[in-house]
Length: 491
Image (cartoon, rainbow, N blue to C red; front, side):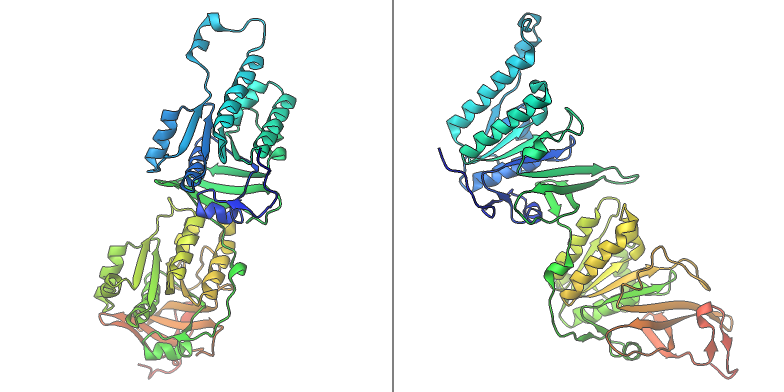
């Protein structure tokens, strides 16, 4: 009989990179773990990925099923395109003869007989294969067969000792359908992974994985989004920017428009976040695209995340104002991501943004902040998510642009959420009325990276691009939307 591993940092991969990351490296070898979640949360898929990963590494792996048969399990694997080559499946399922009244037990309670028979079948297969990894699906069946909480606890304890003496890493699945709130196995298991699903009023449900317990390992705490896609489970670990601090000299990214760069004090610093705020139609997105155009023309990468506008509309609109993005897109310097808030979880979006930075993007545009807000089921945590994302991007030298749409056209304006305190730079666009026409103005309200002008300048979008004009020094009250002239000779 093999001695059990005594090291807490001797890990085996669970077969899901994101979940291994959350677990602090994987599962400690030769321990017993509990994977719990409601039906449909993905337990079977994770169990299959766990065993398939072991089979790929040349290990002996065994799936013991007390509910689904082998055909059903292989159908699940096939649906995900997973190969179960090397995975042994052992069915411990009641025989059809139990439906015959003549086969019913009359003297002994069924559980007293069936639990013993089930144990014999389980142990017989383990003794035959000596597996390195075992999945037992599911504990609900054992709990019902045990009859009492004491008997159930002792049974699981015995299984734990049995697996440990055979140097086996065991994953027990629990669909929580037998007894709600039961904590027996949680206290016995070396680690507990729980899967949760929360319904959404519109769109796909949100799926979250948490590590409730993991003895001797510094795992990543908190909720982590995950999705079930063709190919298996994908986990998106919660971003913790403090884990990736980097110190680097910050240079400026010019916009390519001289008067605008003068307003900014030279340009936008890499690693900074910029909020461009204003009412609809003022040119907020176009202003951010100007920086994208400038950086991609210089041979560097950029990424745009669109919530409202379609990719095709963006490309055609940019062509109409002399800012053709197609060459950069076709050259692989520009990536454009069309985000569907109803289908993408906050964690998935966060990882898409951070992966863009890790892939070399120097400028990232999130258009718009309002769309990002709608993508968050818990709006109260939006600023926390966004803060971590901006810190992560900043530490990688990425200049981030957030588009904030304000409600209203002139006068007092509001926005769904105020993140101006979080952004390093804040640019404001405004409409104002002047001599019977509607004009636009731009100003820099805040800039941490360098000195900047505090003036208001004319702003216009033409067929040849953005024009930042002269200082509006003959007006007063522009921000109210209805300014007064200080000099009648102003033209």
